[in-house]
Length: 73
Image 1 (cartoon, rainbow, N blue to C red):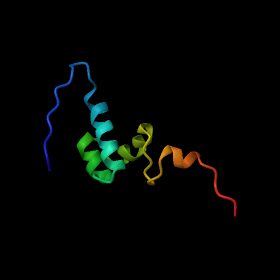
Image 2: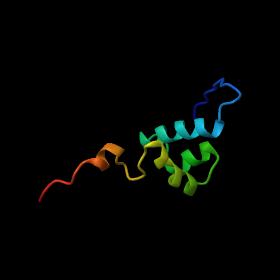
Image 3: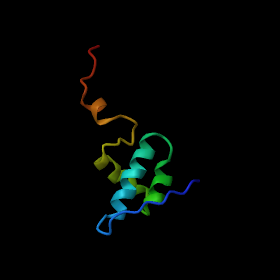
């Protein structure tokens, strides 16, 4: 694993930043849901329940994919 250090303003919500990063890495397939949850410091269940708030589907579809109509036939 690699380590990255960020200097953020004091008022930054650390959990929110971690969730943004974890969601992105999960969406790209770099982290599993369990790894992402561990990174954020939450349970796997909480990560799965929350990741949708960041525009990431646990099923691999994007928000745009879900808005498309089903093909006829």
